[in-house]
Structures are given as C-alpha cells and as structure tokens.
Image (cartoon, rainbow, N blue to C red; front, side, top):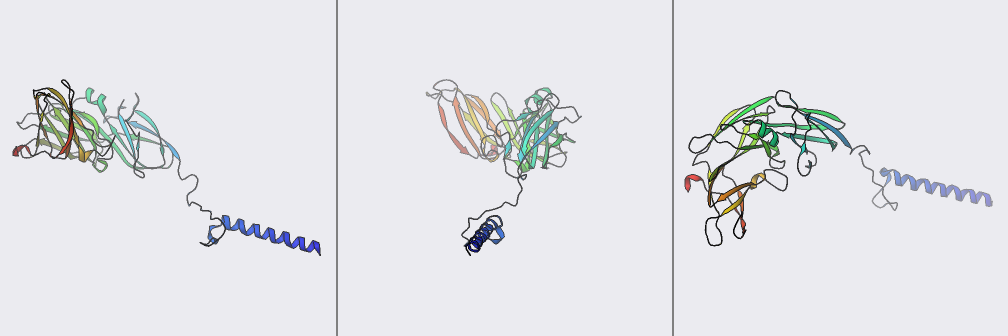
Amino acid sequence: MLQRRIGMALFLIALLVRMCLAAMFDPTILSATSPVPQVVFSDRSSEAFRLVTVTLQVRDYDGTPLEEAWVRSFSEDYGIQVPNFGLNRTDSQGMLTVRLMNGTWSFFAYGGDRYASRKPGYGYFMCLLNCSLQFDASLTLQPNVTTSVSFVDLYGAALDGKVSAIESNHAPIVLTTTIGTTARGRIMIYSAQGISMKIFVQSLGASMGYTFLETVSAGGSSVIRATSDGMAKLNLNARDKDNNPSVGTFFVNYDNFDIGDNTGLHSIEVVVDGHYVLYSSPTLVTIGSTLQRGWGHITPCQRTTPSLAGRN
C-alpha cells in the first residue's frame, strides 16, 4: 500500500514538472493569467544581426583606382553612418574594407582634396544606393556618366572655387563634402547615371565672394549665373572695440543643409578685412564671427534669411 502511494506521488510530481516545463517553453499554451513566468521567443534567429565584411574598390571614370577617395557608408535601415565621424579613405589601389551590420546600405565616394588639387576642372562623386548586404560582399564604385556645370558671376565672368556634393535624397543627413574644383568657371563631374545631386560651390575672393546651392541631374549640362534678383547679399563688417576696420573670420552655416555634427554641409569660413560682400543662393543661414586681432571678441550668432541682392 505504501509503495503504491509513493509511486502515485512520484507520478504526480513528474506530471507537474512536465506541465511546468511545457508552459515555460511553449508560448502557445500561456495565458495572461498564467501563474508560470512567461518566456518570450523572438521570431528572428540568432543569425538575424551579424557583421558582414564589405570590400569596396573606388575607380575613376577611366577605370583607374582612385587613391585617397573619401568614403561614407549609410544604413538605410537604422540611419547610422560609418564612420560616425570623419571619412574613410581608400588605399593606393582604391581599396577599402569596412565591417557593417547586415542590412540595406548606401555608399558614397567623394574625390576629396587630393582629387581637387590634382585634377582642377573635374569632380568625382559616386554612389551605390540601397545595397542589400546579408553576407560578405565586394562592390565597385565607378562612374558611368559626366555632368557639366559652369558658374558665372554678376558681371559675366567665370567663377572658380571648391565644389561639394551629395545625392539629393540623402541631403542633409549624409555628409556633403569636397568632390573637386572648377577651372575657368566649369567643372566636369564624374558620377552615376540617373541620380540627382545637390551641389554647393564656394568662390571666395579677397573682398567679394559667391556661394551657390543648386540641384543638378547627372548626365546633364547647365550654366548657373548669379543675378541680382536671384542672389542674396550679405554685407560682412569687422570692427574693433573703437569701431575701426579690423580683420575677422565669419562663419556662415547653411541651416537647411546641416542638421548636426558630421552631417550635411559644414559651415564655411570667410576672412574679412574691414568689409566683405558675400552673394549667396537665398536660404536660411546662421552667422558668427571672431576678430583675429584687437580684443579677439566673439559676436553672438545671428540666424537670418538674407535679402535678395536686387533689393539692397
């Protein structure tokens, strides 16, 4: 009799343990009032998030490996950029290897300072958009189209300066930086067919300068002319504590194209010796300044949309 009771007790204990284990590991039998602690199982496997190795080769229009090209990777899934600060650079063979989380990424390659100094009159901006990366991959960035853009000042003269660019749908979140320089007012941009680019041009002389913010389509040809009715005019004045002309540096930030550190278009610096006139595409700007001699006074930043030149 005692053995039967012991056997029955062991059976009931085993049954209870089995039910508890089933409740813990089978979410389909759990209810909101279940006294057993609920265990939540992800629908994603342990392989869902993983690092993949991406090897990039950046080539010029003619297929030549592009040394010291600047590269930025952007996650379309999470909105993060690699690197978070600064830019990756290709080696002497135009190669770059990055480790990224699997998912959908876009890649942007800029000519950078080296390209600008070695090939005046040419620019390099290449992108690969929405690449699905689930495993290690090798990708090549090589332009297949040219875009011609010329710049003319208020008096019909050609404007030379530094050119920056970004693919239009990724402005201002992705960094907009140097792709090349103009020569005799013209730049030939090597890029990917079918994209739209937002370009920024700064041509800063000793006492007068121009900045343009324009949108161009890859493969086209355009002439951008400064006009009194289409340009804003900024009068920048540097004065010491006695109101005498002084030398200062003005920082002009284009607010609609910059949403934080290492994104969009960085502010430009304009050195002013007493007085400076800056013509700009009309847009919201923040201006700050620092005197280079005298008291070294820093003036408060001013946020404004400058008036059109023809109304001043």
